[in-house]
Length: 488
Figure 1 (cartoon, rainbow, N blue to C red):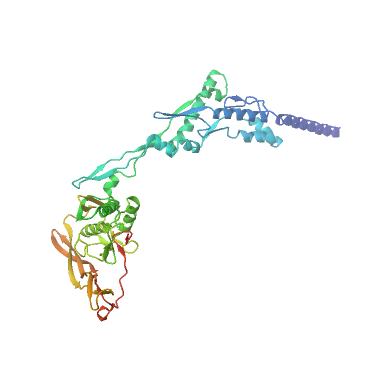
Figure 2 (cartoon, one colour):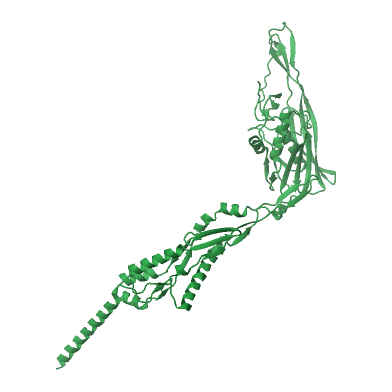
């Protein structure tokens, strides 16, 4: 009797377990979603996973095709939400669907029992698409560019400032926040309206075109009055002029071109001015014309003649501003527009003129040719009671040597002076520092040699008086120009 009892009990348990398993299987193995499941107002309950995903994808696509209108002042641009970079998603829905379809029997039962009936709609924003439409070029065309503040020098050498203007640009960081937020509010409004009316329709049918003003921010110019004033260019500290005398039109053009190329240059504190760079810029920008250049100690036809008058005039201004001269050399011939020892020649690739801004503030160079006078002005800052002057003195005169050339047409013993010689000079130049007009320091700047030019004499034939010099000839450099000699 007792045995029959236990057999019956076990049989009942087995039957009950099979029944429960069958019920669990029937519950978990259903091939449709639980009833009442909605996303974005779309009823997906009792649909197969494939049908539900397809219908959801259609709704998300339809939402992406709804319009959003961007405005910026009078500008209006209509885009779809997809074009604007919005991606509509139902976070977690696909994963839950996957477990509901492919999970274990117990997992599917658990997911089905806890499956949410209303799923939130999420809109993510990627600004990359909008940045292609509202590009930097578009912003420039729509809003213009910031305009830098300007420093001008009046005719009486006073410094004046004109303020710059800012320009608007899209505030992308704000847009990344405000755009999804505005869309979320609109979707929430649709959802609330449906709840209030008891009518459920897809969000895509209730979403009307949304108008959004692009958030803008002001972009200041790179150069402001404040940044200009911080450079410390407070006043004109020195001015120096040289005359163009009887310069021809080509030489005047070359001087003007070189002057325009240094005009407006601003050197930072400890910055180095390089005249070679200015010559290169002038040649490319304005071009040089034919004018006499110096070659072999003589004036010969060439191109660019006169450019050393600019370097020499600037040299005199730099010395009188107390600046450090890094590289400078005198001409091989004295020049007519400056005392000996106070010129600065230039030979492309060999001789340059450079100085350093040692004022501790920025330094502005102004240069102009007017009424056949070249004027260089330096603006910056230095103590007003300090000034500098230049003194040059000839310490030695070099006699002109004789150079003999053969001319068989001359009678024996005959001579003919072909080119008169010129004596040379050794010149020392000093800078004198003055405080309140009184000299306090005298520094030698240079010891220059202007070689003597030989007297060229033709003789019947070489004789004892015409022995060649044992000295090595000086290297012939083209000075005060860029090309030459140019004999035609």
